[in-house]
Length: 196
Image 1: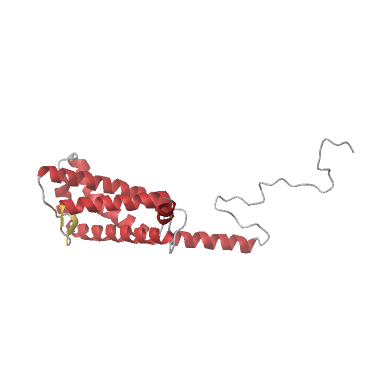
Image 2: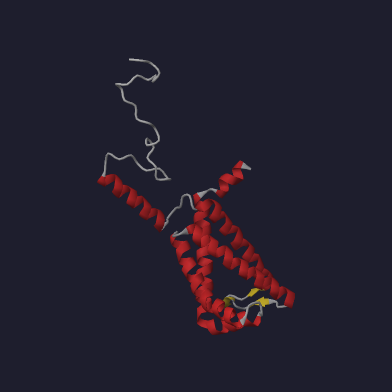
C-alpha cells in the first residue's frame, strides 16, 4: 500500500499525467474549433440541456479545453485545472452514457472529425481522464517538474534571499523555521520561579 502511495506521489508520474491531459484537451479543442457550429448542433441534439445552455456549452467548451490544456502543459494553477478537467470529464461521461442509452455507436464530435471514436472507447477515455485528474488534484500540486509556476516560485524565493541574505529560507507554508521558537535572554534565569 505504501509503495502504491509512493507511486502516486511520484513527480514524474504527475508530469506524465499533466502532459497526457494537456495534449488530450488541446487536440480535442483544436479538432472541435473548425466545426464549432456543428458541435453546438450536436450538443443540442442530445436534449440534455435547454437550447440556450446547450448553445453556451457548445460555444465555450472548445475554448475552455484549449485553455485548460495549455495550462496543464505549462503546469500553471494545477489544482484549479484538475477540478476543471473533472467537471468537463463528468459532462462527457454523462453525454456518452446518454449516447449508449440512445443506441448511438460513434462519438463523432469527441475529438472533432479528425479522430472518430466509438462511444464505449470515449467512455473508457473519460474514466482514464477522471483518474488522472484525481491523482493530480490529490497529489500533484505539492511539487512539479518542468512547471512554469514552480520556476517563478523558485525565482521569487531566490530573489528574496538575495535581497535579504540574513533572512532564513522560507518553508512551504511561508513560515520561518525559527519564528516558532521563543527567544531566550541569556541574562535571565531559566527557572522563573527562582528569586534573584
